[in-house]
Image 1 (cartoon, rainbow, N blue to C red):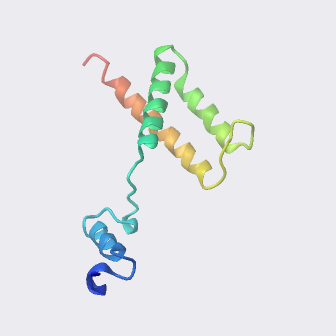
Image 2: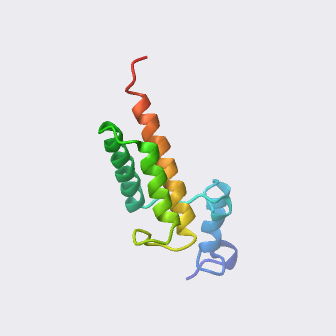
Length: 109
């Protein structure tokens, strides 16, 4: 026995599922994407790497600028093509901002 089309949709329930996601604000139309475990781990690694650089008195702004240049330039350290190039630069900027935010919490108030 199968659910009627009005419940299951033409794609075995995907229409209903998509509808639930949209109603809850988590659907593709809202641009929301759940992070994978690997994405979470990579973000954590990048934030920790930037934190380690800052803790070792490395100029984090210069490091991020250089890394962004390596991504934007078509050199040997660039391993992805568009649209991942601009996304990578944005992720690097976001991780840098998060690392700076975390570092600022250590400052005496």
